[in-house]
Image (cartoon, rainbow over all chains, first blue to last red; front, side, top):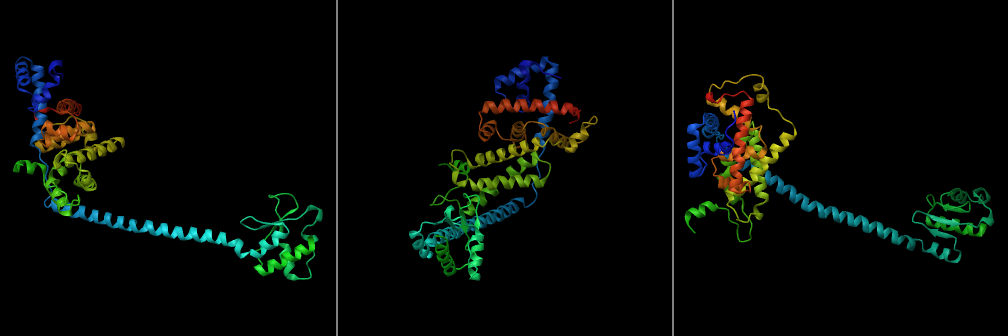
Length: 199
Length: 187
């Protein structure tokens, strides 16, 4: 069932009582003569009547329950925000302490090894890379781990065994001086021995 | 300012620091909860869903209290938040291609309406087939009994646009009911 085109949009508003008096009278007159629009209008009126009569049942005490539920949620939210408010600065402070400690350790490294710097000043054969010391040993010396005979002292033997070839850096004449098993004093002795033996 | 106008504006007033205290918010909830709950109750199938949406609306109201500029009444402002919350919810539901069990059953045969309670139930299912905006305009105008001026303010449109939207919504609703095999005489 389809209403007349000129009245199709007016009939829903006629059914809901929302037309101006001019449009209302115009539709009213048309309905007297048009059965199709009259049936259409009756259908719409049935729908609006059901909607207007139907009411929602609010559960008893809903308003008070809602206020309690909302305040509980807002309290939880507020507590969470407060925790977050403290957590962020605390985390930032902890991170700052860690960063400052790392920077200070890195900065102090040369100072702790001042003797090494002094040694290196004379013979520019060591350089600090941040992870270890690289010894640039002239290829003319034609050495390998086995060429250095430090067997007279078991301590030095251990040290020499840790002079490992590092193929990623350069040719055979580049060696990494690993210091893992030696304290500063022993490492200093080892370097002096190397200086004596090699250079 | 007249007493009536004061009432229309509501009791929502900030303190000296521009903040709203808990009492103002609680009062706002109590004054508007029935309208907001019934709006959602017409839109969804269960009390729990309507309650969730009502709470979501008032949480948004609380979060945005400082942004309320009094360009509209608190009533219109809260309704607008509720309508947007409802439209977003309906869009999410539509995206899930949800087909209600009632509607699925109704499609299987003719529907003879025996009483007004069933008619209302049937009508609610039919309304769910409309677009979210059309559902809202039908609920606000026909169920909630708001004027087109109020509907226009809430939906941020003109009064004429609200009327046109309502007219189309009612025609579509009639078509949906016909497709469901509903006879109007029995409604």
